[in-house]
Length: 240
Image 1 (cartoon, rainbow, N blue to C red):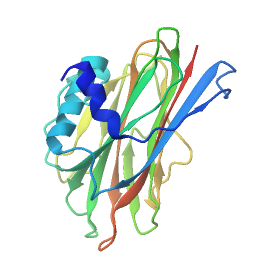
Image 2: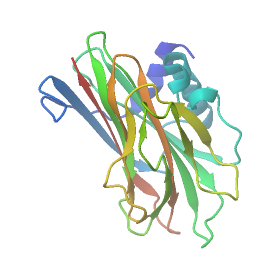
Image 3: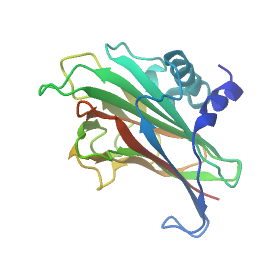
Image 4: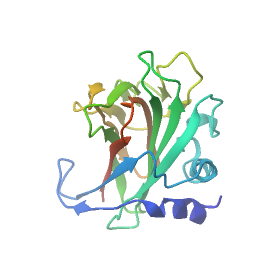
């Protein structure tokens, strides 16, 4: 998949923008997007998702969807759907955002479960620098519950050259990878919480004029007999 085709895959996403001042400084621009994800209404087929994930490595190298392996890991989870997002940046900065969902064996209490894979990548314009990348989800229904998530702690490039993204499930081979961390920090927003109606909000923060990304994963346990939905939010801050 060439770069134009890779970017084209992400055309289905809803984009919104807010430009101006922020905590990062008066010359910063922040753009945010959000989508309501319905498990029954996927943007991409399994083959389209795999092509998009593979194409991310042509642009982002080891910062693509599957990290340093640059290939989909061996696993035993089943593809359920994938969704894309794009953001309208004021300059030539571009960002792409991907959410994949994969079926897990039922949780120990018998409830259906999914592994959610999050990835966002940013290519700063020639005169811009990436400052912050966010991607995360929240559950609109308290009947559904958020399980373990990864990364679950802070990582700083000064002390960690990489971070691991993995599920906490031990009863099945799930998606797992290692992501490089050449600059900045990986963190988890305090609004993250597990349990009923939970939320997970990881981010990358730093300063870089080269492509940057973040990958993360979590488990969602669904109530039986109802629509399976989540709210996906993603955002990017840049400075010139």
